[in-house]
Length: 295
Ligand SMILES: Cc1cc2nc3c(=O)[nH]c(=O)nc-3n(C[C@H](O)[C@H](O)[C@H](O)COP(=O)(O)OP(=O)(O)OC[C@H]3O[C@@H](n4cnc5c(N)ncnc54)[C@H](O)[C@@H]3O)c2cc1C
Image (tube, rainbow, N blue to C red; front, side):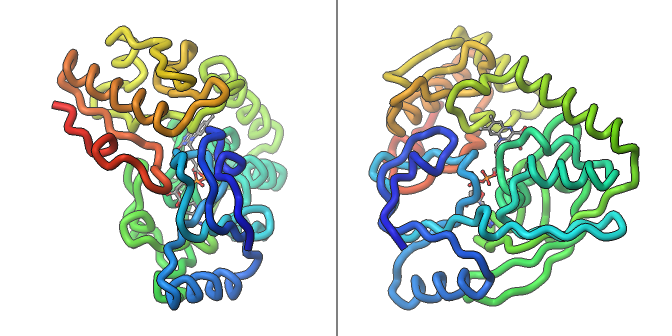
């Protein structure tokens, strides 16, 4: 266990110091840490690759449990993939492709772990985790480990039972069809090129800042509201893709959150559409700013 600045563990490169950060490599270690926290009334928070997180400037008073490379075993047999939560989607998508399996191409360019992706029901280019998942193994807040099948996961647009119940995703089983390896690789390249063309991948971001409001595109609403490039300190609406709020170098969480709320307020005033953040907030924030009524 060690102190660690969260800016080193988030794709936004924002976030102060966490009291402790641990990187377990077994289910027993995860259980040990969570039970220790429970006994001592210390809060804990699970992260994967930190690619959907805005971490507070004050950091986190508690333990960050990072499930990454040390918890990333994968086995593939007869089109069925069993993978631990910490494996990166890019790595998993390549393994799946090399086995001639199709159906995971959409995930190759999403910069998260499998744990984050199942929790968020991540998706892109008409694909989402829901389409390929069979079952998962989770741990609850009491340290009990059990399986959930696809229906029990309640996977909806960017949401799952894992978020609602605070379960820790340990492992997932995914199923794919046999395909042609060359075509699968080509599709991955094609989608990655599309991302490079459309998204500000050269800058720090957490991907789309807002969920897609029904019947609209967040990026278009933000652009039409005249907010392309809108900036507070070092946090700004991306010029390249208005759905992304970026850190131009040394943005604070407070600046980033101010841009979020300014965008929400302006879009609501102009179009009557409420934008809901897709990005998750980690640590303490000014509650008034987070909950600010935008009407
Ligand atoms: C450039 C860029 C492009 C992106 N494109 C897409 C896209 O196309 N589609 C898309 O859906 N998302 C996209 N994202 C967002 C992000 O990559 C996904 O949401 C991803 O699934 C998050 O995974 P993570 O491991 O980084 O999770 P984190 O950001 O570390 O965590 C996200 C949430 O998941 C929880 N969590 C993480 N791991 C676990 C676990 N093992 N058990 C329980 N809870 C867990 C965390 O507590 C947190 O609430 C993009 C982000 C960036 C920076």
